[in-house]
Length: 186
Image (cartoon, rainbow, N blue to C red; front, top):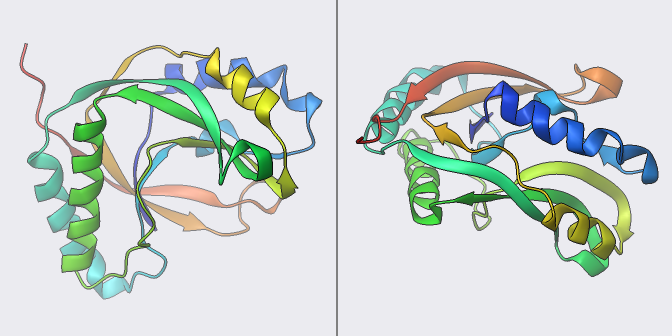
């Protein structure tokens, strides 16, 4: 399972259209548009009996945050462009608010007795995975030219990953619950 911000369909379609004509230029394992999200907390193993408490805590954590604007813009590679294993799109947003949202989601899981992946949070949308490390500076420069439409981050989702059940053996994602943030003040 994981907790994520999922962009609305028009934002996903815009990014997918930008990538569509470019995907043939590289034999990466490209993410499908239905998997585009920003992971706030990765929960490797969640016992079924912990889900109710997790949902309650995530609802409280989300209710403490206020909706904010975001746009998918720019990009990069993990661990770096010279030896990339992952190609990603970045976010143009209030990074403090996004980080607080991630911290709240991680704390909700930890307080529910669920182990959270401890890697440092960096808001991004995974676009492709590379089988072997590769130099992708040209791809990062291309992504730097991209800016999608602005949308309002107004909720977080708890998502279950069904490994191997998606297209070409990829994971299939199922939203378990959606937790609204407080509306932004006009």
